[in-house]
Amino acid sequence: MTEDNTCTDCAIMTEDNACTDCVIISVSIAWTDCVIRTVYIAGTDRFMTEDIACTDCAIMTIYIAGTDCAIMTIYIAGTYCAIRTVNIACTDLAIMTVDIAGTDCAIMIVDIARTDFTITTVDIAGADCVIMTVDIAYIDCAIKTVDIARSDCAIMTVEISGSGCATMLIDNSGTDCANMK
Image (cartoon, rainbow, N blue to C red; front, top):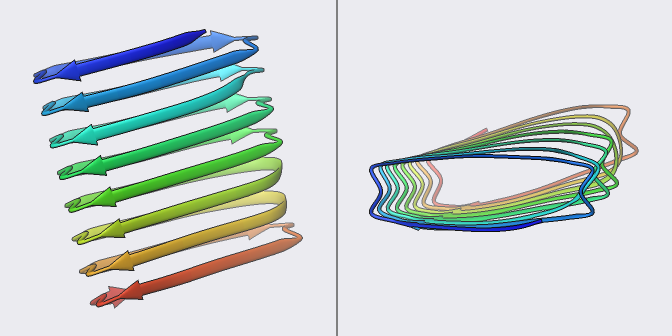
């Protein structure tokens, strides 16, 4: 199952992708100058790769939910987004990688909740963000790595809570941040 969705100059764009018992699911989404953009993806038992790129979006919401995914990779890159929200919830993942890069975002919120997975890596890099909030909650993780680098952030909040984690590594490096928690 492969989906390639491209949008240019759309007032409202909503996508609902659901998959069950798929061997490979690849979703590649690119858009420019969209007023409202919502991507909702739900699946079970799949190899899931998502590549999402956005430019000059007023509202961007990505909600992804999955169960029993062997490999899940989510790569999100955006430029000049007014509001950007990424909400990801998964259960029983072998490998989970979330790579988010943004430039000149007014508000960026990343909310990730995970249960019972072997390796989780969250890599977030942003420049010139007014408000950035990263909320990550983990339970029973073997390895947890959170790498966050920021430059010229007005407010940066990183809230991480975990239970039963064997290894937890948080690399927090930022430049010219007014408030970093």
